[in-house]
Length: 167
Image (cartoon, rainbow, N blue to C red; front, top):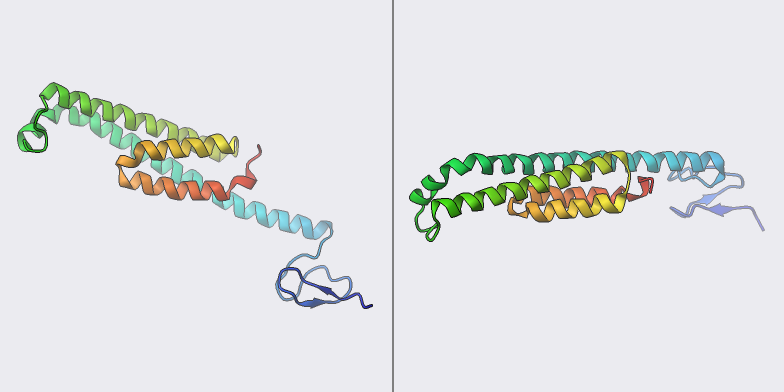
């Protein structure tokens, strides 16, 4: 029987001792081919980690910004009640301020959780913790559509980058 091999990726017939498939470039084994494929996979995962990190930082920054805006809005609580009486009927100035204050605290907390997820992702540590923190930040920040969308995309890239995490 001949020593003819077939490429497991594309099915092309290969001659004996072929190191790489001439059609698709896949390594047929050996230490050099394994190193090359490992380096390629690491590069792809590194790009995903970078993308996830940037998205998580942007998400955290937006959440922090919205949280700070809530505290600025405290001074406008009475004006909001006067301008939109049908929307805020039943609210007093104090209850409106308390609601705005609570929203600000929640958004700042979500930003902190998102920042922690970004740090873990950047360091490629504790993938499961980073993933859960990303979900929490996204769930808390879901009141802002932009944060929810950024969070979903960040989760995708974080999921795809899992193999490059060290634990």
